[in-house]
Length: 129
Image (cartoon, rainbow, N blue to C red; front, side):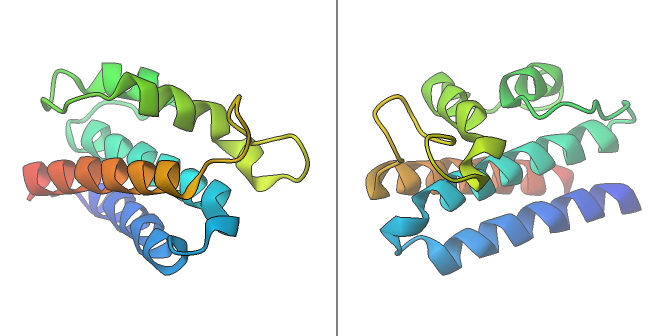
């Protein structure tokens, strides 16, 4: 495995670890969503990097999953991906930003985001090892 690939995976693992520390706090559901999005993004970028392609400077999970479809068969949950893409940076700001159409992510939604991010991270990590 290339050194840069390891760095992407390590960065993704830190996002997963961060979620484990905050997942029980419903007040931090927006932060869970942010770290879930980041874990998936970094995992996908590690796969792109390992395959010798140029890592694009995009944050869209939909676009990154499309780029990775040639390398790995991962079940893409379109609804979760759309939600995570919509929450990406805005989840870090106050007020109306970073909210789903129905408001702040619920604890249940945060758990779904975490579960999916973990699944994607582990699938890619296992593929690359």
